[in-house]
Image (cartoon, rainbow, N blue to C red; front, top):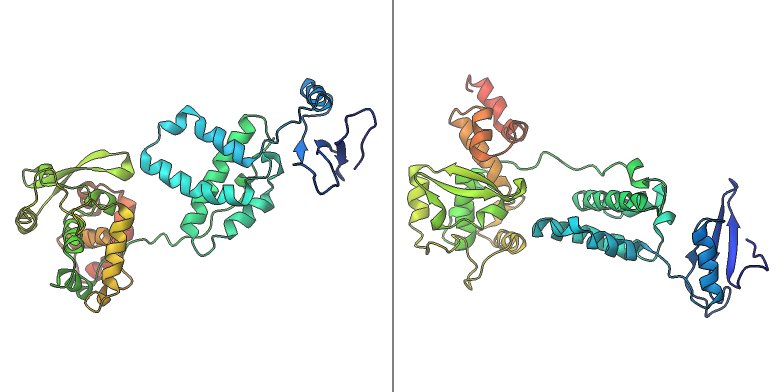
Length: 335
């Protein structure tokens, strides 16, 4: 680490073992009052000499760190075109990046840094992988704007997730959902979920106004609000129509009359699990209603392709959910 006398005080260079030289500026370097470490532009470039002139005039350069880059990333016009739910997901994944790396410069991040950050979420692989997605996006952003030469996140593998996903409810679990002690909102969610096979985010938006002939018209949030129509069995339609809900009011409402969001609906489900009456639901989530719908239709003789069209999911996902019963159906000579 050296400093040339011809450069302003606080400017110095560091030579790496591979011969690469980096130039920095730090006010009051080596003192308790020292300022932030600021990496200067490439030596010899016009930007380098401009930074030296700024320092000599007393205009210390501002350090461009990850926090500043995240602000730039979010100010890009494309950020505003994303769906609110997508923005919320991205924000949750950006939070730990800001927490652990906020003061670092984009060029400082190495493969080891990325691995260390992702490994902090070993117990929550889904969240860890979402953080990795955002790291890749940010590092790509940094490369495109000349803050670094490569994307270190490309070399990092995603954490392992159990992609088996949903499983069908047991008879005991379904009985718990139909029990008198089950909260009305949770019971209605279960009925809608088993009838349509849709995700919780779409179930909580369904209303009487969406009833369409012998089914219900709605959109699939995961597919960017793609329109979809779900057939209801006569007994399902009769049950749902008997709830006495106003045309524009969601079928599933909180006890105080307010709307649920996805998280609060999950909280209601999990709260019921903790009761004696809901104990049989332990280990099940609202997402398992999708697998239950798939298995119901397989037992009824539908093909994987037919179920995929009915529910609005891929054939591969239908097969993944129905594998819980397909072997038994085959053994019994069924579909």
